Image (spheres, rainbow, N blue to C red):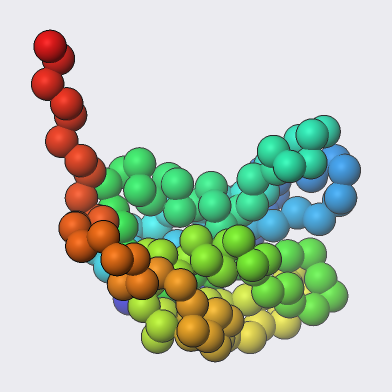
Length: 147
């Protein structure tokens, strides 16, 4: 497992690519998967605010697109001063691909650092186990036959 500082460095690199002309609130994220692969993401704002994509979401999307689905730990960096916790939607996104014991490292560019578990950030979170449909949610469905 990589050190939180290693994830921080990768998250900072992603942070510098953020597109945040409206809020001026840049965010970078770095995920380490259970296979040890690192995926980064940055926030991408849009003039139509609802279309803004969070850094955590871009990193998770990259992870899934590459065929991985388990977050071992994640680092999130903001300008500061002080760390910022993921928004509620991103807490839910992280919860989907992590365990309650997965570490979420929060950093700012000034050296502040706090670590929480997913369970601390989203206690009693809703996840795949709460769905009544019993099938494997971690597998891509088969393509339908072309008829």
